[in-house]
Length: 109
Image (cartoon, rainbow, N blue to C red; front, side, top):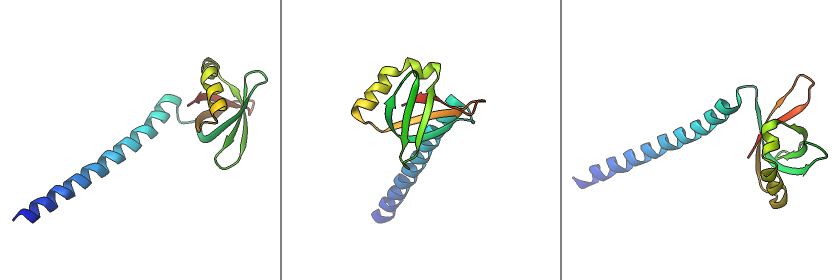
């Protein structure tokens, strides 16, 4: 009589864990979309360099090099950007392409 109850408890625990993971992943995806809009691109990689001026050189995990201009929000985070360069930290980059076909970094985390 005890085995069916233990099996049911394990199945419910696994089911709830799977649903929790799905909700967490879905909410992180939706957060990026809500914060930046649907025209924003996302890349993961490392910041190679900062400057001259408000420009960033970013290397994606796939090896592509992106040259970006900093937006106003990005300019307020320069100390954070500098720390990522110094520590060679993995970085999430959110950017758009403006009407001049330049890439503009909106958010760096």
